Length: 221
Image 1 (cartoon, helix red, strand yellow):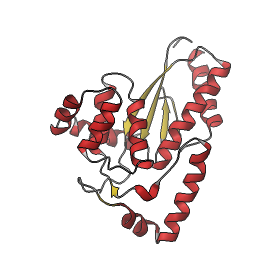
Image 2: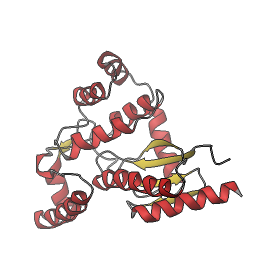
Image 3: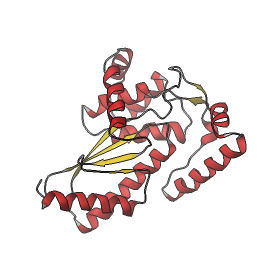
Image 4: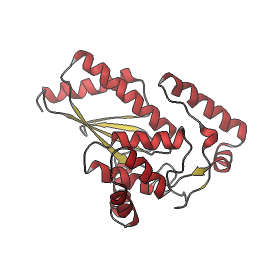
């Protein structure tokens, strides 16, 4: 790869993972840090599916009761929410966990991301899904909600609804998710750089930037 060839950054994530929204913002800052030293740095961003809660019913289920059971009480849930809120505030994310009513199944959200990626960069759509989930408290397993988000990103509602009404790419998304697990991904977000290096977790932008620069340097040698 020469210095003008784009670096492929794959992000394994789930749209119901609050740390994945943090990861997006920190990746953006990492890219800005790299460009301070290498202004011509180019990259291609690709999103890969992960099911944070693979047992979620297709129609979803009540959000807070699930978290209370998972973490052992409402007080513990509130502590976790507060920690994430504090991090989010530093990144311009206004988490509104109390608005979330449904623990969403994200199969169709991942299908929509894949569909969008076949047409170009899907990052705006991914961000729209994060905002819908964590700021607006919308149900991102609802096909109508997914269509609204897609339309806001410039896609045609009729095309989106027709695709989501089909079974197209259902098996593919599930296989991609299993492939990421075979790579060793067991938590999200996970960042994979040119399939040569990876970072698990919404790490500090400086760490991500260092990893990117190391991959670039190793590839150029």
